[in-house]
View (cartoon, rainbow, N blue to C red):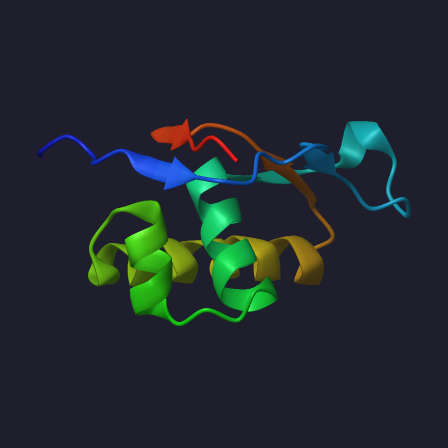
Length: 98
């Protein structure tokens, strides 16, 4: 398996953990969303960029963005449907100067 290409991220997430209030902490499962998944979601879903533009901004191939978005959407759906916490951390990212 070849090493992952560095993804360039503009927006570092401030709060890195989101949890539902309806479950006690000790019973709470969670999903981990990587920082590159967070950035891809921000660019595609919040900013409304198409996958080609997201790929250019993050300096990776469009097919990589497609896989990142698919993974992020699956994790977020799992968290919402199954009442899980979402923790944002990790990934092979470098932060752009703003």
